Image 1 (cartoon, rainbow, N blue to C red):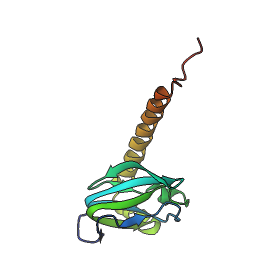
Image 2: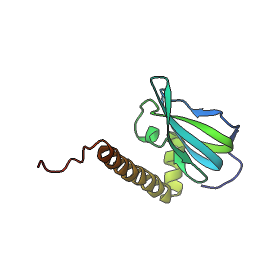
Image 3: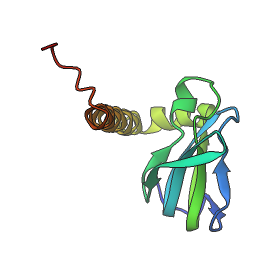
Length: 131
């Protein structure tokens, strides 16, 4: 994707995606950083910080589910929105985009798997064979 000034600029703390909203697009951070937070029981848990050239909300392209997290700008951030129709058009123009999405999703699955192991170990639930 090019870095032309096509994206929208968000100010610090401004919501880009709200947890619970229907997802119909993915986003690419063109400049700055955004934070991803999950809200539960009135509390927020930071899931991560996403920066330049990284994608967020890509699950919405594949499944039309509600957003699993809220994303907001950390400082000023420029973010490009890409809906399903334009995403498919871009894939035809540049098939490497599909590979980038798969790389992103694969990395996130790996990170989540490592986090599950870490949490289980911290809770004493190693999951190994019984003694």
